[in-house]
Length: 373
Image (tube, rainbow, N blue to C red; front, side, top):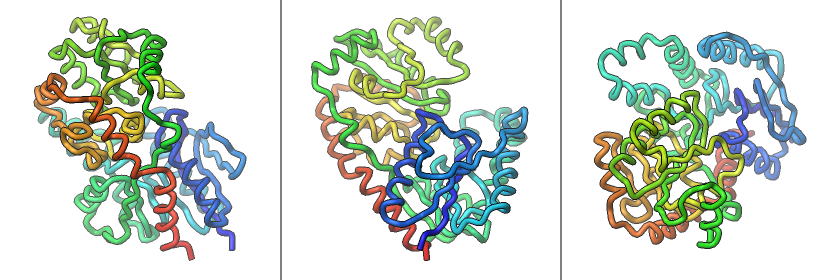
């Protein structure tokens, strides 16, 4: 019997990891279970061939107002339509299935507060946007409709239990993101040199790669600080940030601008992976970034932080390193180590070969089988 499923995602970005997961999930679910799928969104730029798109108006002049309007408009729309199931990728109270792809906001604020200082924490606690997100998150996890939460790392699962202890642990399902192992493959040396030439960087200089939008939370300031004390490395930066010009000015002031290349958003990041030797992702907080899976599949070792969910895939010194955010010397020490980055990259590839897209789809289907009746 065909059932109706609504998927909620506020907006789609061509470079967004969550959006790729949604498309893969929808394709897989349709193969195993007959579903009429609707997408509830403010902006969707993907294929609309196999499902209905219900667009809701974008309202509000501030991010707080936009967030609250999105929650309210979505809940109103759900009252106007009859769906058997609602799966949200946003913090919308009332859904039956929630994919916690953005992690736990309460934990992000806790971590961020550790580095802001007393005055910064005071302002953070009074920030209207953060308060709105915390309210929605709390209501979501306490709502009686919630039956299953899909966690993309064990870190996220434990954070939910820490901040929202009334959640039933059996409703929290660990399903790691899958990776297309045929699309992301290690380059040959010729491909690496060609990629470096096309990106306009030195062919014989060890190369770090940073991929992510929202530079501060993903750890770019930490990398730039480490680069000052790591003169043998050059850095590629893929992604966007509203403070991009400020970062470029900082690189100029710190005397590292000649070793940093800002590439902006790339629809196909593979040339950047091909050109790099190491992915560096010392995020302040990141639940389970696809960039780590993609880099490892491309044969790159990974340097990440203890606040990144995909640290669970890293074996220290074997396929990468997990470093603290502070002191910055920990990252500098790793970059100055005599590590065999090529061998570590080969091990990284073997690690993620355990997580093909097919595995993720099977595990998602298993979650759905427990609730779709």
